[in-house]
Length: 322
View (tube, rainbow, N blue to C red):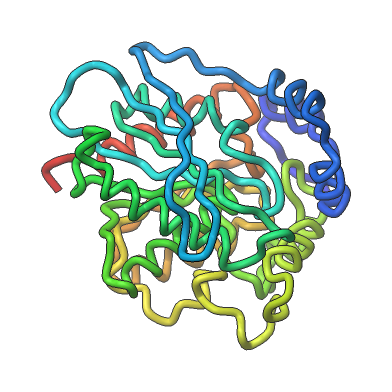
């Protein structure tokens, strides 16, 4: 199938290999420390305009689970209590880590003037659902409890992430609503994974799109639900696939970002529509000519606009006067 990729993005899209998710999982499992360091050395960098302290920490995990590693990005200039963003990385639930998204989190901390806590949640298939989500909820509880130490305003704590991280952001909003806290002021869902049923036209038709494709979407759900319900079956809970939630009322305001040529596009649009219908203040943005993850891997006019829009929306979503 032909895709009308933005001309500036087309060279970047051509650099992305078309790989099977199973091969990626096998490769990640066998990656040596030297190979991992070499990979991390090639990642994009962001140079902040203000000093940002970056520190790795271990925080208490869920009950009967190991501690959770987080990376905290905190602007050093003295300010009144800042907003905070709990950030969940992408990677199809099976790969990637907080290091891969270091540049993005540094940029958010710098440009939004916020504390960012990036969560190194457990991944599948070694730890399938609900392990990652419980790690995220434990991290949200910790962030609220450590707000005084971190200089964070507990009324301005948001969650966000891309792809699988978008799923975990949407899911933890459902979970914390249903468990009675802690509160979240805003959710940033960037090209989110939301529906295990995979019946939308974009999942069906986009079998070979750059960045992500329908084949790997199906494999991803099998990995994430390992040992549990079958993807698409009747027993998949909404905390795994937020589109299955019957009640979306009482959730925090949302920004939902979708890419035109992304298998996940239609479920993102559908979730934003359902949030709006439930009375949740929701902004939906689709970027024409883009593909899954373009704002993270490419540096063009359109991706700069995408990042500028992200910063604007996060500032607005976490402002003090809401």
